[in-house]
Length: 167
Image (cartoon, rainbow, N blue to C red; front, top):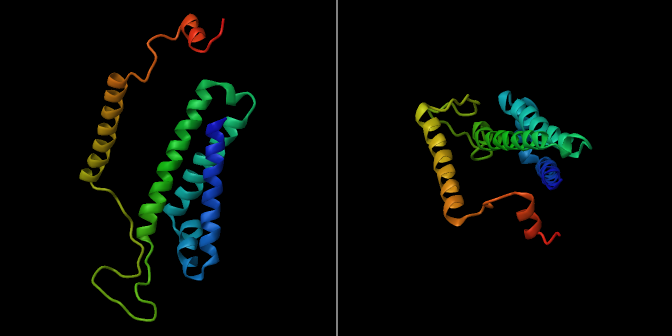
């Protein structure tokens, strides 16, 4: 249930963030790009972040039957993580893909296709770097679990009852 509350709070703050950005005129272009006209960025925002990352996990977690099943809770957790990854992509790549006006009222030109939205495809080295970071973090977690002994040694009924003071 706590996961559902955190997901709902995250959805609320994303909503407030975009509404607040729409209040300022200079952000209208970026918000239109992310929310309506951004192609893959818009699709990832609405389908990846909002539907798969927020609405579907909340529906699973707050459903009276599904919210008590470990398998469905695990699915909701995975969907929330995938929605978070979609949010990172939209925020980082989408924010960089949108052409900004560097100096309002002045013309700035370069050889880098100013004012044009470009597609981004990560190179093999970037993918390997990302997977390497995930691997290092998993190794650190495995090492911490082994050395710091976070997990219980036994989960039989007698041990759990003794830990929680039940008779």
